[in-house]
Amino acid sequence: MCGIAGILDLRSQSKCDLDLLKKMSDIITHRGPDSDGQWISSNKIMGMSFRRLSIIDLSENGTQPMTSPDGRYTISFNGEIYNHQEIRRELESEFTYRGNSDTETILYGFQKYGKDIFQKMHGMWGIAIWDNLEKKLLLCRDRVGIKPLYYYHKDGLLVYGSEIKSILTHPDIKTELNLNELPNYLNYGMSSKNESLFGNIQKLESAHFMEISSTEIRKQRYWHPFDKYDSSQYNQKDVQNKVMDLLRDSVKSRMMSDVPFGVFLSGGIDSSLNVALMAELMDRPIDSFTVGFKELEKFNELEYARKISKKFHTNHHEVLIDEKDSFSILSDLAWHEDEPNSDPVCIPLYFLSKLTKESGTTVIQVGEGSDEQFVGYKWMLQGYKFFNSLWSLYNPIPKVLKKGIYALSKPIMKSFVPSLAIEYMRRSSNNEPFYWSGVSVFSQYDQESLLSDKKILGKPAEYALSIYKEIEALSPNADYLQKVLYLELKQRLAELLLMRVDKITMAHSLESRVPFLDHRLLEFTTSLNEKQRMPDTSISKFILKKSVKDILPHDVIYRKKMGFAAPVDNWFRGPWEKFAEDRLFHSSFAKLGLLDNDYLKSMLKAHQNEKSKLGSKIYSLVNLTLWYDRFF
Image (cartoon, rainbow, N blue to C red; front, side):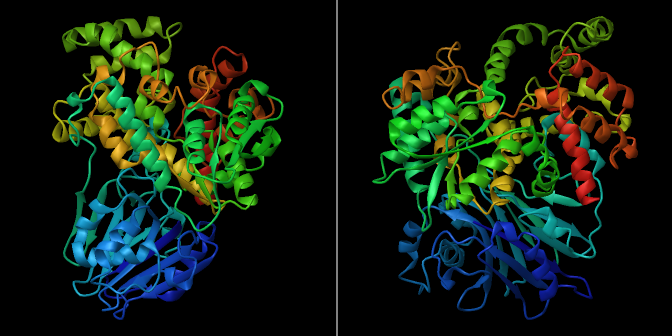
């Protein structure tokens, strides 16, 4: 796990030099405190910068940037390839290895297989490879988007990096607000899969590579999860067995490490299963880590984490935090996130990562990706039922009639119907998709009152429609839950949840690994039809719960889901109330006049009067203002 950055400067006066590359790596030292490296091509148009967090092959042989013996290819790579030894065995007859790193295997694999090497790799990555013969740069991001990769491309200059702050180090890149992405942030809690909230700084989408030369820039998808299995041949027991076989293999492969590793343990089914499957493979206690809240016991899952720790004999660590601890890191969070991330879970995750690193652990297993595949969220289950009942009855009504119903009922419903219900009516009246990925923070209905600039309204709907078009092209017969899984993979998982994990763990030089998001497991779960995935709609995560009944305690499997959370509802009604008001009305971002003050005042009042729980909405806006202050 590392951090990469680089410059391809095809202008007549290239500014690619070693001093600038060093600055680009120094600003992300947290991603790789063990060493750094810079490389520049002989013609001075291409340069790479690298920060190293030593995980595999701790010797100098794993140092990057790394150049092939013939001098043609140079690589810098952020991530882990879990099957690199298997690929290495295919290559050793043709290539002489200098060390044991997975970087060297990617380099030789690219020499032999070209871009087909990405199909062979199991893992997570952001990769840059320079071809000195063809004078061409290739960038690639892993299948699921576990690792970030951003880039700026304009007027012959391309600058890329694992974090945006490296890109902004370049003197020719101005810090600008991408106003068109603001509605996506407000709705999805994060910018979209291609763009960022910085003007002219984009993301390389998951499961894509990009080639850049003096004549063209070309993007291409190299993977999608559809149609890899024929699920009709599996009965329910077969499905459960296959899921467990794939999970066991995934956990085993992610225990590859030359440094100490452990697991985040909340006491829920996902993290507990990580512990159980790791325990099967270890002859020493697992190091487990849990975070809780000092004064708000109802938000704690410590009891269940301790129960799992006792059952599997882990070496357990805990940290307790309160609103004062959390308040002290808010500005630093905005810096490490690169872009505002509306999920307040970043707060406890920060302290959990800090505890883990300070214990001497460098690699951690996390549970992201399970809820999306197995329908674990309450709102997912409710949405599935609503889609097959009221939506299926209302949506076929002619559009003109629906628009009339919406226009007449909207003023009446506004005072006593939840805004999300009104939003569903709005979507249907405009023939928009029902499901947009996750629960909207500020739906378009909310944004009609929140945003002062009405010209940018509608972006989230356009974005959702674009992903549905992808699904139609990739798998025309996909059912509702298959579409939901793909939407989650492309947006909420890749751009919010996984970026939350990457940025906050790497802030503490900690590598996180995600067993539930092994691409082979995703290919299998995506193939399941609705009946296989949800044979009983009264039980969330049906497949997983039935699969682990002989592994985990019954009360851990079937207890009410709490979710990893932060008590921002309480904090914004108490100690953070004045702070929120100051940020929303007097910060540098507030002075831009993009948000309607009357709406903000009514939102804060409704929250303080306990008419609504709006802490997450307030947090998303406060975090936006903190981000703006740190970068602009």
